[in-house]
Amino acid sequence: MNLLAIETSTEACSVAVLSGGEVVERFELAPRRHAELVLPWCGQVLAEAGVARSQLDAVAVGRGPGAFTGVRLGIAVAQGLALGLDRPLVPVSTLAVLAMEATRLVPDPAPIRVLATLDARMQEVYAGSFELRDGDALALEAETVGAPDAIDLPTATGGDADQGPGWVAVGTGLAALDGALATRLAGRLRATDPAALPRAGRLARLAARAWARGEAVAPHDVEPAYLRNQVALTIGEQQALRGARTP
Image (cartoon, rainbow, N blue to C red; front, side, top):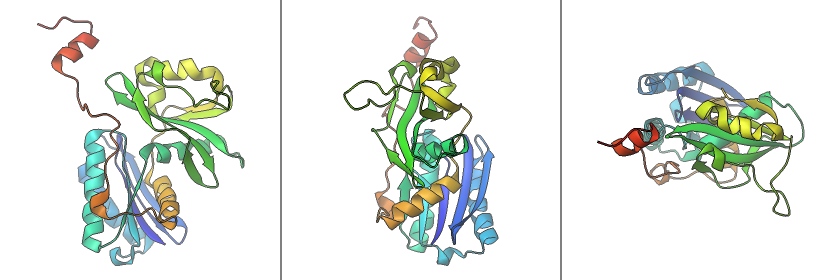
């Protein structure tokens, strides 16, 4: 299949084309430049892959969670392209895409259990637990957002916390708040990468599997995954977090 993938949910901007099983990708840490880069990059990767827009079977997008502006931008661009081409859209969890980075750390043929995290700001972390199996990321629990001390690994059979080491943890949530989450889970993790970010190439491969399962949807049916309704703290909450008094 031919698939265009867009991932702008974090400080990284990434676009990729999957065609004939091969991926052509652009990836760059580009805070506040996503809107400038994403559409030109779409044209560049399509040209490099030798795929015309009319040859695309679908468009894929990272649906979040992540930076609110980035999530909205990625979905809006993907929706516009899909509508213009009369193609379906394949939304994929940004945390699932991020979880695939664990294969760089632990190249095991067996399933890999992964905690994927992103710094959610406001002293919170986005987190999702996955099992990587046969090139796919299978969610083990519902994705969540919370303080680092509220994030844990899924419970094992019998209700006890899954003890390691055996898990891999990736993403910027590990470094949030002076590495609080990474420090607390250190004894249960066999490998970590706090700098890992989601890439459109990984998104494209996950989306191709989702498309084959019939999970593509009409462009207007895609909803962002914010995981929380509150986008920003009030001034009073910000001051409280700094230990200051509200005037």
